[in-house]
Amino acid sequence: MTRTVRPGREHSLWWRTATDFMRSRTAVFGLVVLVLVVLAALAAPWITPQNPYDLMQLDVLDARLKPGAANGEGTFTYWLGTDGQGRDLYSAIVYGLRISLLVGVGSALIAAVVGTLVGLLAAYAGGRVDALLMRLVDLLLSFPTILMALMILAYLGKGIGNVVLTLVLLEWAYYARTARGQALVETRREYVDAARGQGIPPWRILVGHILPNCLPPLLVIGALQVARAITLEATLSFLGLGVPITEPSLGLLISNGYQYLLSNEYWISVFPGLALLATIVAINLVGDHLRDVLNPRLQK
Image (cartoon, rainbow, N blue to C red; front, side, top):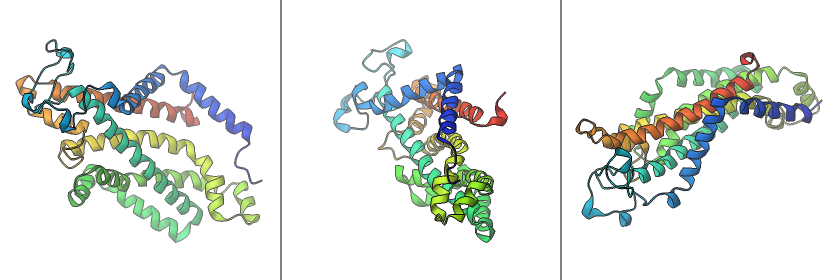
């Protein structure tokens, strides 16, 4: 017996998961908000009046704070107002969502690949390899995440690539621990012994037989880690160690408006903060319901 699951069972699992997901109003609401955020980020050049980080599109002679129509004053040209450099805040938020999603999804995918491979290797090899890799995972998970991120970025410097690398170094251990726990259960099953007896290479057993049965919890962790990565990027950018000032970032926008909060120019920080909150809440709603659906112990 070399197949992991029968095609009919696999189809029914994902069909049941999708059906249960659509029955939850909160999950559907989160999914709708998330889809709108992604579409807005992808269509940024076509739905915004300007690229706020293109100097050729800015009016340098009128670079000042302006309230927008959403504040009860101003015009609909800049309906969320402008920041201290005269950049349209709505455009900056939409372009900032691109960076947030790029960093969040990119770091989560890379960390998932690295962590899953490490976890599968540890479970399949066992012995000293398992002990060494899991002690490394325990060591990484024992340090405060934000402190480690600050230390790494203080050495690497600012930049989107450095932020993604930092988040990968901090996130892969979560996937490794989960993948190892799931793989330990699967390596004791009969289909793995049968595959070994047929002389199938270990990498094919790991990728083709064990990995598919480890995917459900990894998908849940992946969804939640995207939200976590977006939050960390915004925090690091707010502290001045994340994305450089030449790139759009929701964390930078919140940081830029922080000094204006007490002077009633609240929109520079509040609106980017609301966009960041909506994105993170939407991802968490989807991830939480996926966890409930894919974990039988949480089902009623």
